Amino acid sequence: MLLKKQTVWLLTMLSLVVVLSIYYLTSPDGQMNLAGNDQEENENTETGGAVVSDVASDEEFAQERLDQMNERSMEKERLTEVAASTELPAEERSEAKDQLDSLNELAAKEEMLENLIKSMNYEDVLVKADGANVKVVVKAEEQSKTEANKIIREVMNELGTQAMVAVEFQVSK
Image (cartoon, rainbow, N blue to C red):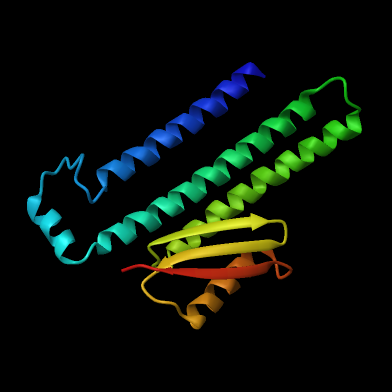
């Protein structure tokens, strides 16, 4: 069990390093501006900081993904401990194993849906599925009921018609 905890901890820390690195590299303040492009920095100032909102929304997507990953990792760790426990009845261990399989399947479906929806020419997508409820946050240039319906149809095709799907657009500039 100690190895699994260390693995989860390591993956969490690596994810945090990646998110922070991306943040600092795309920071409009230019504190760690590796490119050294002063013209780009002046353009950002002239546009009234439109880049700041893009970075903030990118950061929000990354933070949501990180939170979701951490939450899932903790739940997987708990279920793995229950499934591996020899002190619990076989029925409880089997149920924990089934829940773990279900959680892994759900994560795979979310990732597949994110890739599918991104392929529909969206900048970024975040899918959060919780049982029969699915929330899709799409970063797009404009909101459209037609596009929302297309996304809902794709999600229902993949997860089944019983899914309750909510689509939220974040307008990018």
